Image (cartoon, rainbow, N blue to C red; front, side, top):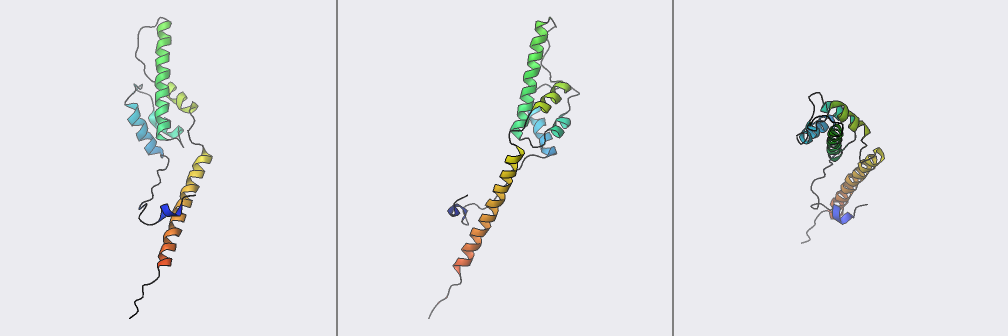
Length: 143
């Protein structure tokens, strides 16, 4: 519960809920973070965006970091097996398997709780401002 003094008018003029990213936002986040890695031409960020409902931006960045690390391990393994030097590149299969293995940092239950908390915050803020208006009453001048 939030202290009513914090909810008085003028303290917080705007309430903003930064919800989890939708499909288009996840795709944009993946595109931004994919600039830092080498992706194979057939790697599909759209497919990863479809697989990652409920993931945060940090979760999506972690998927690409994990895929990059797996690609580096594959190159090192190839070198140990005598295969010529290649640069780490994230294949479609590697990217999709990394996305499928990943879990969101926020569970569905936590997300529901955040939504409920925000709803309670909004309704309690409305009730505080309504009470403040009602308690002011009308000014009367006696002559």
